Image 1 (cartoon, rainbow, N blue to C red):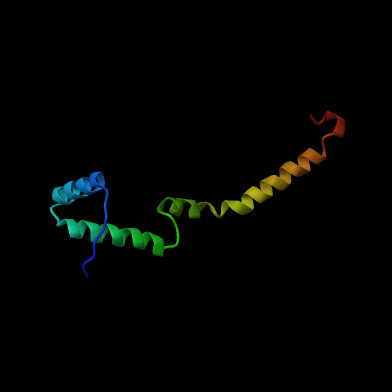
Image 2: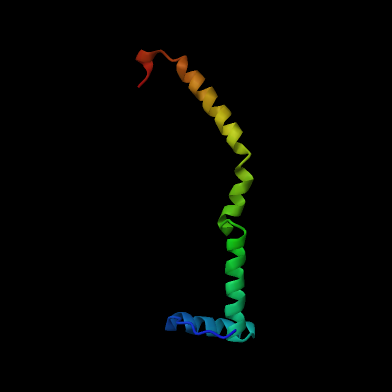
Length: 82
């Protein structure tokens, strides 16, 4: 399908140069970039969030540590708290 896009001049020049460096037509560069952007959206998460998913197992450990800290603070005399 053909369409018309308004692209800022500076971005257009950068994209044309990138297409030339990669040896692909400009339309292919735009198609690939759009497909990549939509694939990231389909996953439902931002790419930089992928590594944070590995930390979800720490939630229970954090809760356990918070309970231990709270219990220790209960042993401190009220007049010593500052």
